[in-house]
Length: 614
Image (cartoon, rainbow, N blue to C red):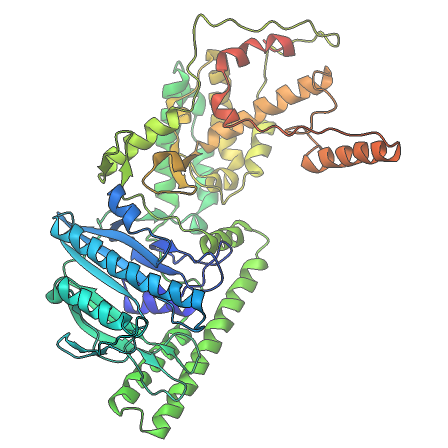
């Protein structure tokens, strides 16, 4: 996988078709900058995948009938549609395993798979002829060594009375009947002595002119035999990504001493005099932006598609490996010295990749200042976070424009919230037996705010207001004054700035169809400044509740010095004690679906009286 990632970066590959992926739920399937469509085999081995570069608009099939027809579990296949302009091309990848065991049941399964592939080809071509797609491009390892393919796409295959031996003829006949062109004319499999054998991997299309510049590359890894890498150009499918100003503030190189001096010299009392909290925070943001532009340099983000472990030496050895492969191809693998050089470069590239990856991961593991880098790297290997190219509404209509996708997802996320009923009865709470102190004032002081700013995680994401935790932490003393004034005014007025209510919501795919909006969950990035005030209020309320014994001892969540571990320890102790006294224990596990989204704010406010909160 690492060599494939490096090759894609070096050669700027936009589409990748992979057979025999051997993927499972625990596999590393992600390629940074690519969306993946995959179909894994239920048992070990097999599997197919299509990787599409994020600059291409590649989506699931939006035709449910066709999606069901091309989703047969009999054949290892995966399909997607590639949108460019007003045209849509149907892309597919198929793997047909060879027959290794000629037992009756295996033979019948082998025949059934070949027959189903023929029907799949017919369904795909019918969809193209029905004007649902502009064209068809299908790649795969079909394992028909009995078919001899020529450069013009024609083939020679013998018909047989034997049902098993005649599968190759039936496949060739269906490609002829459907007018599909087969574009591979060079053997695609290399045996142990580097000698090409058969054309097992095929490239089928409805228009031969759609495919161009076909070439072969060396197999991945250090193996002596395997499938070659097939490179080709899919004409018409190239799209240029939308260009925008991607410059960012380089927080690591900021002059925070100078920023702090100038921020401290500002008369914030005059700035905020007679201003409501909304306008006071806007004034703070204007000064913050001005100071950041003055004292923090701008940089362009690096190429995130480049593997972080890929260095110059590894890149050069991979290029050398490819050059020696083509040199051996030109001599038909008859030059012993060239073959020896190729094998040495192949083995060296494999060692270099493993060494580079290992060194990079060791540096990540040793980075105690920012452990988020390690978890981000692990997450990037285990999950694919591609763009949402299309979505379906409740009526089954598919939309591909960004505005419609955003609106549909917004409706889905907001639908889970509880709609407040004005005439809904409020619950009644009994009087508390302990404590009589009422928390009616929350004081905000400079020392507390400064300490909280100094403890901020510098690597946290920026909220919608653009304020960075990195800047607040480096200039904690300078920014504590304006923030204290804003916090106090917010509490006095009983309102918060609109910037604190806004959030950058990112839909995260869970499982199932990517067209279904209910298969996404929202993750919100809110203001860092708002989180500081929230932490102050939370601390005051929690101190009040504990002091007045308003939280039962059995509560472990969100309580200081308690957590899941302490809850489990008490539970295990209770169960063990019951077992010792031969007393049965009944346990009921409950989980509230979307508990934080569905909580009633009216009832929550009503419950404050029960907790002596004013």
